[in-house]
Length: 213
View 1 (tube, rainbow, N blue to C red):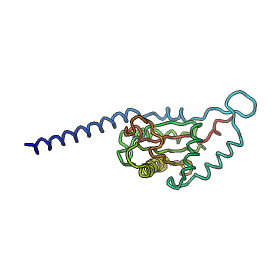
View 2 (view 1 turned 90 degrees about the vertical axis):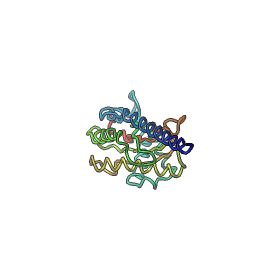
View 3 (view 1 turned 90 degrees about the horizontal axis):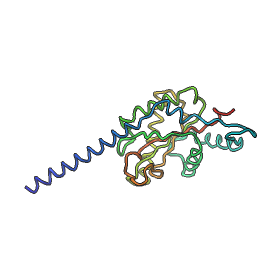
View 4 (view 1 turned 30 degrees about the horizontal axis):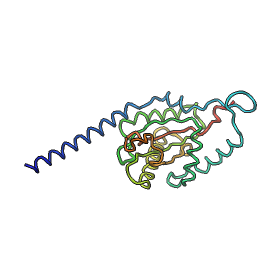
């Protein structure tokens, strides 16, 4: 009788875990965004040169950014050093960006079915003429479960998955997509590191020249 109770107790625990995971994925599906929302987020703010009012651009700083981006363009994600990853994050913090919350299956680089619409919307947005000529950073993130080394590799594979999808399905230039992984170092929900919301991809428009005037 004891064995019988233990067996069904384990079955109940397994079912509860499965239902919890399903609920998480359903919530993730509700976070899908439209192509227009992505475009609005990634379009550069108008910049000016000289003494006119409005955001200013420093030609020297812009040239340094362009030089750095060229050093990481067409690089394999896992080849980026920690210093290069930090530099990308620093530059990206001032650029037009969007957190799409693209979800991945647990412990996997496979895109969750509920997030496919977001990836498709991203492909349409990055293919839009208004963003032509821009370089985009695709940054992969994991939850806090697992070691730093493992999560770093997993986040890189997730970023590569998105890049491959965009290149194959939307004809985007391989060199215009710079992929980087941050593992579990930049959690979206720091209070709940295991939450699926942390398994995501962020996209940043690194170019501002398309909005200069």
